Amino acid sequence: MPRYLEGWIKDVVENALRRPYLSRAREKPVLPLIPRIKKMKESGLNPIIAEFKRRSPSGFAQDRDPVEYSRLMEQNGAVAMSVITENTVFQGSYDYLYTVGKTVKIPVLMKDFVVTENQIDTAYDLGADVVLLIVRILTERELSGLLEYINSYNMEALVEVHDEQDLEIALRCGAKLMGVNSRDLISLSIQKEKMMKILEMLPRDVVKVAESGIETKEEISLLKEKGADAFLIGSSLMRDPDKIKAFVSG
Ligand SMILES: O=P(O)(O)OC[C@@H](O)[C@@H](O)c1c[nH]c2ccccc12
Image 1 (cartoon, rainbow, N blue to C red):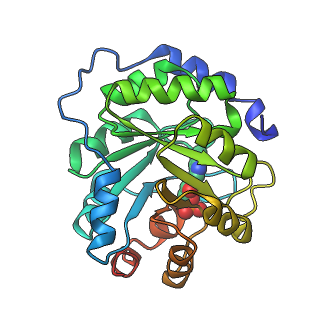
Image 2: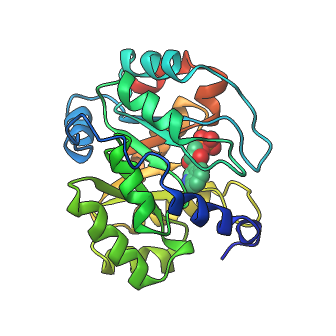
C-alpha cells in the first residue's frame, strides 16, 4: 500500500460502506467504452478521456463547473469523461459523477480507490459505465473478484498498472482495458519512459490507456507510437479546456 494512502484508505472504505445514494436508481443504460475507442481510432481521431479533477496530492488545484466542463469536452469529441469521486485527498464527490453522467451521452468513468463491492454498486447507481481498479492497492484475488463484479453490471473495468508486476497480475485476471499510469503512487513523480516501456509490453488485444502528465499533442503522438489506444488527461485540460480540440484531432 503506498504510504500516502495509508492514512485515509479507511475513510475511503467507510465512505463506500455508507452508500449515500442507495435509493437513487439508475435511469440510463450502460455505455460500452472499448468499441467507442476502437471506432474513434479507425476514424483517425485520438480517443481522449477527459477527467474532471479539482485537486491532487501533487498540488494541482482548479475549480470548474462540472456541467459546463463535461459538455465542452463532449462537444469537442472526447470519447469519455472520467470523474474523480475520492473526497479526502482529491476533493472529488459522488455528486460530480452523478451530475456529469446526467449531462453527457458519452461513457463516464468513476475514478476512485475502489476496494469494496459497495463502491461498485454506488458507481452503477450513479450512472458510471466504467470503474477504475488500481492493481497496486488490491490483492490478486480482490482484483479478480472486483473485476467480475463490475462485469456483472455490464460495466467495464479500467485496470490501472504501474509496473511489470502489476501488468502480469492484470493479465492473469483477464483485464481487457488497461491504464498505464506514469505517476508513481509514492513519489508522485511522472515517469514517462517507464510508461512507454510498459505500453510496449502489453499484448495487442488489450485496449491501452496512457494516464497522467499528458500536456501536448506531441506527447500523444509519441505514446500512440508506443501502442497507446486512448489518453486519460486531467490537469492540463482542466487548466486549458480549449486544448481538447487539438488533442482529439489525429
Ligand atoms: O491530471 P493528469 O496528470 O492528467 O492525470 C489524470 C489521471 O491519470 C490521474 O488523475 C490518475 C490516474 N490514476 C489515478 C488514480 C486515482 C486518482 C487519480 C488518478
